[in-house]
Image (cartoon, rainbow, N blue to C red):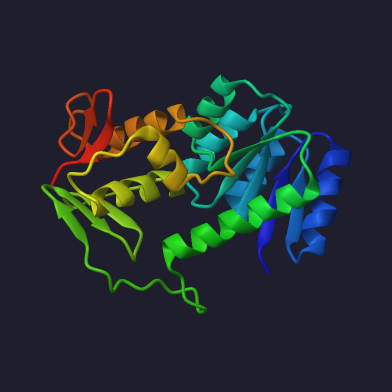
Length: 234
């Protein structure tokens, strides 16, 4: 049974989310403020986090940033705010998706299931929970990408990427020397059902560069083709 943590200060909304998720076979835990939510997320094992943006104590952005340095799981931002800058900021903090209130319970459950399934596919976990590592790694200069193990190395140092960062890097590296515009990348990585816009792609490209490049302003791996998009140089 997959475990979901809901961090939401509106108890009626949190309970509604909990009820629908439990009906669909999930085990659900709840927290009503940022500090408690962060503590639970850091000290217990959850498969997915539903994280409200505006919380007492610590807000969703701060929690997301702290979690991403320690934990690897899908994070869905839940908020009543619709501004694009908040969406981009949320993705920049490491969120995997952004769902705006009010939303239907069916949409919430569908998104949770979709992200859990995507995460399972990315990590390639077997029924025993062990990872396989049969697919040949991608090597470009000092960069090594292991698709099945879901690991990235720069030299001998492992680099930690979020789900979407890894998926975006893997897609580009698996299709080297081909230019993809932001619309194509957004559709391929986030899908048509995701909130946000193509500026999200730029945010994630910049975060990947900061992690894998010696000089993120002079990229060796992911090249910007002005007016066209991005390509992975190999």
